[in-house]
Image 1 (tube, rainbow, N blue to C red):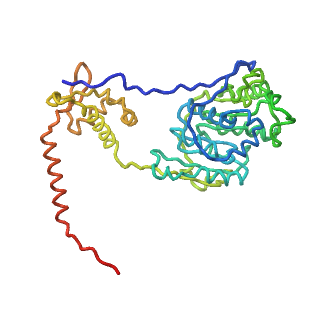
Image 2 (cartoon, rainbow, N blue to C red; image 1 turned 90 degrees about the vertical axis):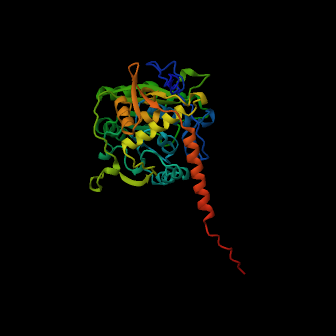
Length: 410
């Protein structure tokens, strides 16, 4: 009797961490994600906004994108994400759409020129038509004022605002805060903004890093703003981190500071995607473009999917039996089968797996208090005869073809 199964089948996940600097803003370390992303897209727009772009490797904007995407991944499943100030859509196309569970991404900006660039950047790639996604994905680009509330974006899972708030007037900033924390109420909010303390390290710099900046906060000012939000909206807590640290001058803190707001209250509501909203219910933002990504639609029933996966893994477990074991039954634990990811996506309920196998004429028994499926020995003579019969049929069908003499053309 061959018994199959071991504890060696465990997924190895790479640990990711977020650095947090304390109340005094000291002792912080850079948050970066080890991720392979290759692109030939020009970064000129970001370079203009990053005066210190030549000081950093990877470029500071990439460090910010790495950090925010890592935070979103660490915070659990995010099916609906809004990126305020999406500009040319680089964060959406290079990072957000690659998150495992995402099904709807909304990029919001007021600049039509930037949105036009984002329209092309966020379109499905040729590769994504050849290899469709398993889950649906809709990417919407919207034109609107960041201080206005759009009902369609209520209760999304996550919001990002990367280097945005420093461009807002005080009135718009207050409206954005109320709209975000008081009306949208996402589960996770990630906001990044420049750290004014770092500016002393840039040579020949005066004023702000970008001519469109209305203000630039130091760490204390940013911390105060964040804590005022959590005082006003106690359902949220906040943690602070950053990217772009100076090895020689750690006392100035990160070049970009990051606030991650997490909603403490469980206000779970039914998921309502924009694609399911009636036209008459559309909100204050104008939809600039909409990309519906190709999807590999699977019309099989739950039972068919589960049976296909179980049969595959059962046969895969038993295909390496040696010749002297072929006359013995194999016993595969159902708990072992339930560990395979494609089975676990459907169910980890042993009783459901047992009933499905029995319905498909598999024999299931209990051994040592655990259910096992019996895999009978392979009948090689039967397999050989079947293959030989298939070969003969193929040969007969080939020789019966009427050969047509090739026509000659002048």
